[in-house]
Length: 181
Image (cartoon, rainbow, N blue to C red; front, side, top):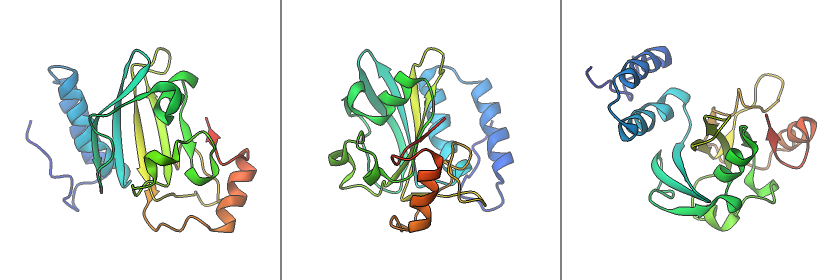
């Protein structure tokens, strides 16, 4: 299978997905699967960054990333102290529209990055082996101003984190700055 140029404006999300599925079917090992995810997820979803995390006992190992700026590739964090560990422990997608409004986010890890919004989903939720994170300056809302795991992937980059309408949407969604599914 030939590589698809994911920066090509002609490559639709369906074309990227179809190509990724074909590549995954022929993946030789876990490292090849991770590379396929890294190469396709960001362009298919349209966010500013993705991270692929592997669970290693009580640690979260950031094994791969594709982002507009350097993040945490190669680093390991205690699962109890990071969003990827939280998603794996809860066995569900965690959506954080604004990290400044979520007390469980270790802000010191994000202060020098572009990341202000996170959607983190466990890989194999019934018995998590890792997580995939979508990272951006903001999370886009759907037509009703609601934020959930369906709209979480549309990480935008306008950096406008202070819009009152966004905070109201979060409060309607369950308050506290976090929307989980």
